[in-house]
Length: 130
Image (cartoon, rainbow, N blue to C red):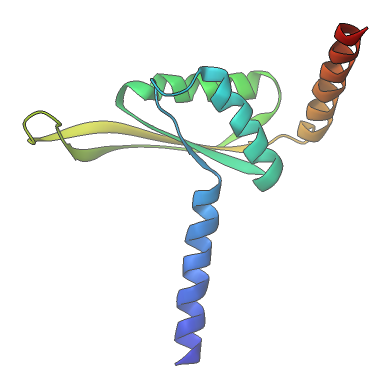
């Protein structure tokens, strides 16, 4: 019986750790670079980040992933697309929405690039105070 309990607990832990590095992107709530900077922070903490979006926000997720890749910070690990059944707000009838999930991992020189950008920021802050 204990083995079953331990197995169930480890499954729950695995599911929890998977959710901690997921960012659900919206078109309307936050600016683009909020998500870019949040993804960088998640990659520092978890070594990878999963970007997720529905419908019209898919373009935003793809843009975030491309910015991170073009800056040499991230590599694509997995891209998943699907449709999700949802209820429409006004009439309550079912509608299908497109969904994308992009899993990004750190590049080998992620930490060096992040340190360099932090040094640049500190230098600019020092100049502004003078």
